[in-house]
Image 1 (cartoon, rainbow, N blue to C red):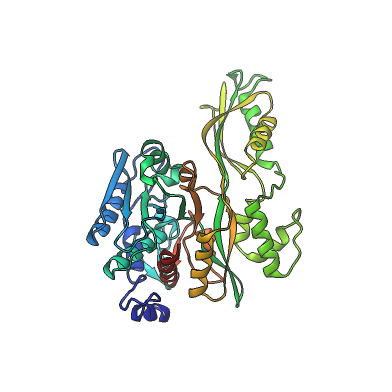
Image 2: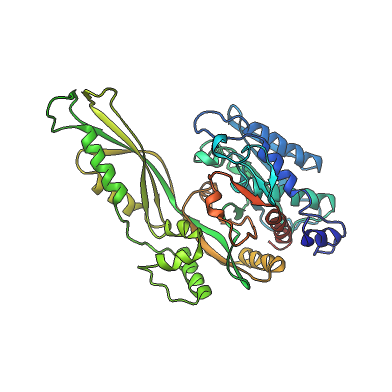
Length: 452
């Protein structure tokens, strides 16, 4: 236990002796990791139901009832309403959400069993340690402690733990919004992944990146039809050739920068922190000074499209009549029309696309009482903290809640070691989160529920 954690145990900042909002967070994170909730896409994962039931049990232990929703067998999400005596019922509920599923992990590539939840070198290791069972554990640790010590949140809390986020939320958040919108009735604001983690600029300044926007998603299937025939014949209508050319054009295309409001605010914060002028047309050299986060920021300077799969033919001497490819496209807020127009141009006349999945980009302003509470609570635990907005390259369940008018922020607070490649942990090998970072996040979140 860290010194800060011990002080918290002795006296909670709010004045409730014996409060330990960070007391269980490490063990809860380990237990969640041990439940294999791998999401293989359309196939049922092994443990989403098990994880939801475990969370329901932890909430039930402190008297919080929950309800399970299951659109398909064992694809389970949990919803709980928490509004104890002392909560200001006149305020709209705050949605606090996390997902329970994780992406696959090949154990042969890892230094430890990815579902062991081992603690090594001051970190909890395992698939989901940062995406996003760390935040799930923070929420549960804080809520359980507040119930036990009789500390109500400022306003009602809606807790939602979803399935299927890692495959587009079709059996999780989006399914709830489409079939049970009442679960977030009254909610106007939400916090979840990915944001609130620190980026050390210097000893007296750490930027905490709060997600206020995320790129839209366009998963496309490219299809080229041609004339099938013998592999020894000349063929001027070869589907493989046409597809390969289109894939090459998409994969090498240099998308122009499209700076959004969130991106501009982040770049200005970086410019001020580093004491340098940023040229919006040549930011890469400056971003490189930020370390691994530069990869994520670079991906949000404009739209992107990456070919990810190819399929054609069945025999060396047979020219197939069809060839297909998959593309992972992402577009910034306001960039959807330009994305599809560009893709159409790059495909040419003989290749078409079908949409596998498209979801909108979302963005909200970095302002208001909720943002002020984030900054205040971060500084209380880290005097060098400065909250700044950022645009995330990936997607989250925020897309689902945004469809119902909920302002979504990525705020899963973590004070991280300056040399930790945190961005590389997402979906990466040897995913891990420092135990002290988990405890820090629980304390910040605990303060946040007093002010949010």
